[in-house]
Length: 245
Ligand SMILES: C[S@@+](CC[C@H](N)C(=O)[O-])C[C@H]1O[C@@H](n2cnc3c(N)ncnc32)[C@H](O)[C@@H]1O
Image (cartoon, rainbow, N blue to C red; front, side, top):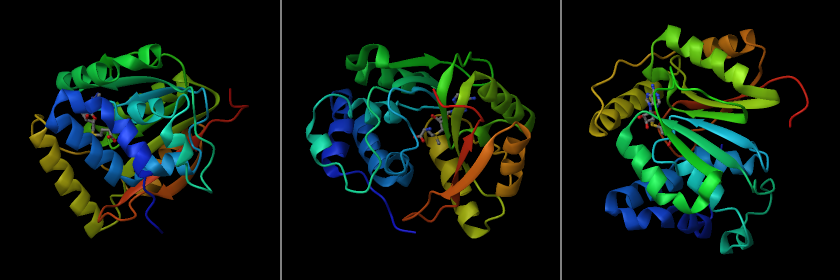
């Protein structure tokens, strides 16, 4: 499994909108977009179609929207697009939902220039309307709520997706031993540092996540998403039947 990273021109462009917000927002954006293999992996594998309506649940300060927004129009990033990657998903409209007011404020401030292509709602995913979407993304979020709430979020995501729609769900594999325990420890520390209480995390083995998604009618593929990290993260690519919009 080799590490996939964003081309540096694209990283520069995607993180530039956070620079005026101060050191924390900008360094955090650079560290996360540059160091987390999920973002490059989504683009490399073409998991987000062009012009999709994308729901980003637990979007933090809007990094995925920033990355997708930086692909639009003619840009230096386009020229540095890696050979072998799927075509750049341009024209994607993002709706981010996030619990933490500071993150939503940062996302709204940094990405105001994207207009209607990036909007952010302050709210709890357990109660916030998901609207309609072609793609839903939940990266490292679902384990913060209890099992019953997870089921309900997944049911509501399934109902919000258009026929042929995709849920991109990254989870830790609770059956993965030490890498899973490292992931959980880092998660707890970062979550505490971001202003949450020390959380109880509601994790499951990979097989159980897959089974829950299949029970909701998704066809599920598991893609390891931890190359270059000591973690046990897996991206579940869950597709609904039907022609994609
Ligand atoms: C580990 S961070 C991941 C952020 C982003 N998805 C990413 O991959 O960069 C988890 C995010 O989920 C948010 N979150 C946790 N519980 C939530 C809830 N019930 N509703 C909405 N957002 C939530 C946290 O505030 C945090 O921003």
